[in-house]
Length: 193
Length: 193
DNA sequence: TTTTTTATTGATTGACGAGTCAATTAAAAA
DNA sequence: TTTTTAATTGACTCGTCAATCAATAAAAAA
Image (cartoon, rainbow over all chains, first blue to last red; front, side, top):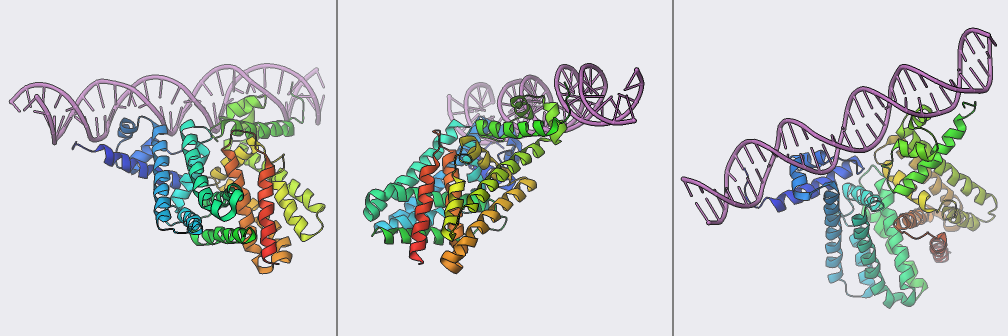
C-alpha cells in the first residue's frame, strides 16, 4: 500500500473532512476518528500527519482563510476604480464558494475557537486586519479620513450576515446579503460626496 | 444546613456561574463541576436541580435573553416617536449590562450551540424574530415597505458588532458600535425621506 | 416525637476520546 | 538483495467528565 508522496494528499483530505464534519455537526465537538474516517483513513494516521487535534483545526482554518484570500485578490485584480475595489471585496465575501453552509458553520466555530486558542486567535486577527486594510485603501479615495469608520461598518455588516446565516436551515444565498451591503455602501458614498 | 426554599437561589447562582465560566473560558467546554464550584456547590446538586448540562445551558441562555428583552421593553416605554423606538432598540443592544465581555462571549457560544441543540435553536429564533419585529414596527412609519430590509440591515450590523467584539481582549465599549449603527440609521432615513 | 420531605455531597460508574506504540507492508535506496 | 524509509493501522493507555446513588443532615409536617 504505502506509495510515497502521500502526505500532501492525506493532509488535504483531512482538512476538507474537518471542515465538512464541523459544518455537519455544527460544533467543534467532532472526534479525530470521525474526521479521519470521513477522510478515508485511521485516526492514528491523522495524528501522525498533524500531531494533534489543534493542529488539524488550525490547518482547516488556514485553508478557509487562504481560499478566501485568493478569492479577494483575484477580484481585486480586475477592479479598476476605488469603488470597484470595495465592491469586489464585498462580492468575494458572499461568493458561492465561501458562502456555503459548511463553510459558514466552520467559520463561526473557528471564531469561537479563537477565544480559547492562541493560534486560532492570531489567524483570525490576520483576517480581520486584511479585510480592514483592503477596505480602507480604496475607501480613502472615496471618503477620506472616514475610511476607517466606514470600513468598520462594512466589516460588521459582513460578519453580521455570516452569523445570521449560520442559523438558517435553508441553503443560504449571498444575493440578498451582497445587495444589502452594496446598498449601504451606495448610501454612504452619496452622503459623503 | 438544609433550609427550605433553596431551589431558586441555587438556580440563579448556577445560571450566573454558567455565563461567567463560559465567558471566562471562551468556550462551552466547561465542566458541570467548574460551574457548580463557581456557584458554591457540588456538581451533584447542579444535576439535582437542572437534570443535566443541556438544561443548565438552556437556562443560562434564557436568562440572557430575558434580561435583554426586559431592557428593550424598558427602553421602548420612554420612546415617543417611531425613530425614538428604533434608536432605543439599538441603544439597548449595546448597553453596558448586555455588552460585557462574558455576556458577549456567552452569546457567541450560544449561537454556536444552537447549531447542534434544538432547544437552543428555538430560543435564538425567538430572539431574532423579536428583534426583527421590534425594528419593523417603528420602521414602517419611517420607510414603509422597505422596513423589513432595513431591519435586516440593522440587525446584521448589531450582530456583526457583537461577533467582532468577542475577539477583542480589551474591555468593549458600546459607544462606538452604537454610534455606527445610529449613523447608518440616519443615512437610511435621509435617503428614503 | 416520629415521619416525611428537602437539601446536600462524596464516591462511584460507565462511556468516550485524544494520543501513543508496536507491528506490518511495501516502496525506494544502497 | 539487503536495508532503510514512508505509510498505515489495531490495540491500548490514560484521563476526563456527565450522570447516578447511597448516605447524611436538618427542617417541616403529622
